[in-house]
Image (tube, rainbow, N blue to C red; front, side, top):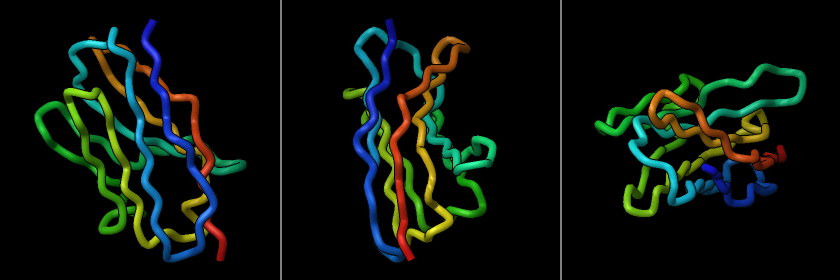
Amino acid sequence: QVQLVESAGGLVQAGGSLRLSCTASASIVSISRMGWYRQAPGKKRELVATLTSGGSTYYADSVKGRFGISRDNAKKTVVLQMNSLKPEDTAVYYCNFVSNLRDYWGQGTQVTVSS
């Protein structure tokens, strides 16, 4: 059974930085895309950033220039580096892997940015 394990989020002041990581279990193969989503209270889950197996990246307009997504293929890990955090970045963050047309999700981790 494929499992994605996320690192702990945390509480950070506005303007600060936080790094999230997500590691997949060894059983997952042929990962075509890794990504991060987030869901704030009372809002729909939204896409934050993605990274394809070919190296293409996508960032939501709200995080462009502040967040960076990277990966370690050997470790089946995706990292989201978040800089210049804003209170509106507060949300539960979920990692997502796409493998053989199936979606796999992390358990979610809380990120809170105080003003």
